[in-house]
Length: 144
Image (tube, rainbow, N blue to C red; front, side, top):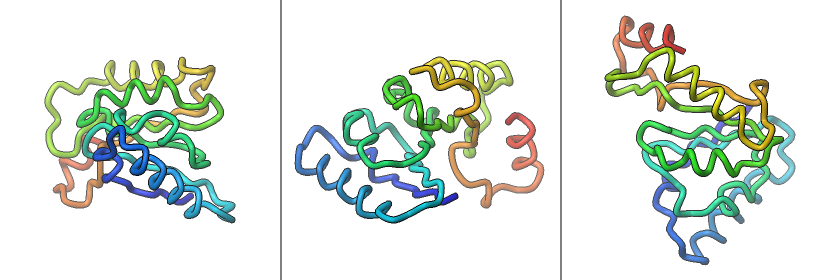
């Protein structure tokens, strides 16, 4: 599995040139890649880029930071059903108001979109746990 972190996706707007540049870069990057490639959009929402832009390159799955980018739920609903969705729903920076029920809801909502099913849904933190102390990292992992 290869995860491509693309925080700049949250800065793409409705510019046709930016959208085309992003989609073409993704297609070139994945040309000839036979591993499972996942696009991670972290730190905000990429909805302004449009579903065609985000889902144009043939990534097998997508990780969305749904805490910092809640509007990306609209992208999740438009993702092709044969592609996986990883819901970044456990924040790294702060744990306020995240419950097990919220995490379960996120998985089931993503699974309900485009006939995806739970087999094509994952759950994750909204970023790396590397900067956290051990108890804080364990707290987030336990919630997942």
